[in-house]
Length: 219
Image (tube, rainbow, N blue to C red):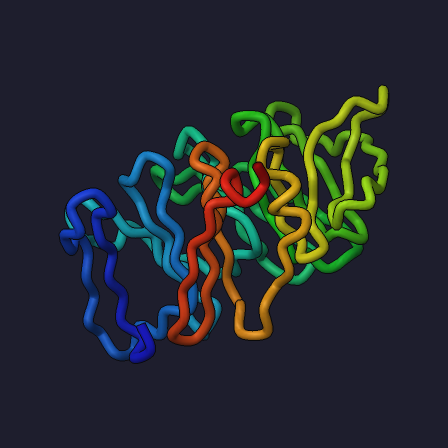
């Protein structure tokens, strides 16, 4: 909220499930794990707090920054955040222990797990990196331009892997690609989240929040 406090609601029942009224929390960004068990809040001082939503307690605190994309792996076992402008670290969600550190020479604006958590995408639309979670190694990719507002990222055999938009959002669902690729960021937008299963994109900034069904808009 504007006063820096944080509230998490159950979207099915609209019930409040987690609330922290501390005015010095200074929450600027919040992410919920896919299993709805954990949350990560980010404050203005570069602190990340990992919460257990079931009991409302902070599990641990570390330093870092969430970027565009969902920091959680699909199985809710890991999360990835930037430790500086060009370094990304993966942590175990259960205990906060570091698993991998990925370095690049370019500024990181997006971090996203893909392929059911087997790979991690970091970088930006200009320079993208694809990392294997199994080996910790970077995989070679190529790019092509579809003329629809997105860049297609392919493997070494020129097989499609994922899209990245001009505002650095990574996704794989081709059904919503026309709507997502044509989406124009608004001047007040400073956060965006997307559900590939439902096709909904939510974006907000300041006191504004909008939700769009891209499947409907693209069909």
